[in-house]
Length: 93
Image 1 (cartoon, helix red, strand yellow):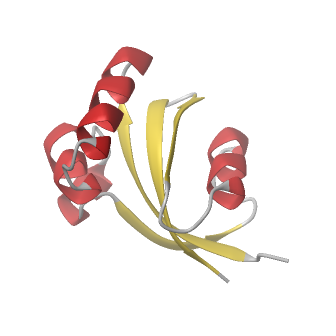
Image 2 (cartoon, one colour):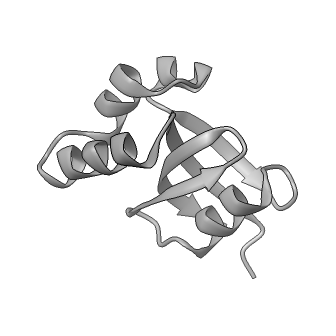
Image 3 (cartoon, one colour):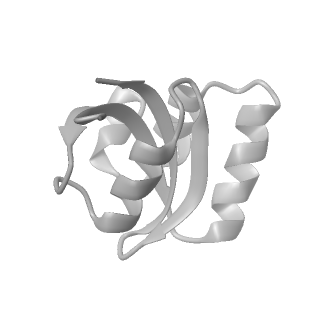
């Protein structure tokens, strides 16, 4: 059973913007560059890197998406109380 996820994310105000950024990533832009440019979260200075986190450390919708995602993939857009997230699952352990 996966106990921790290493993930990065970017946070924007609406689903439309999240989908636009996702298309840029699919088109070849790096997740890190898009997080630095568009994210509203302070983690943007680190390309959205959140590091390792376990269960119950994130809001439920974010946690479920991160734990369900496969390493190397970008998940989302995911809506939480903070806005809309794209989550890059880096690794699991």
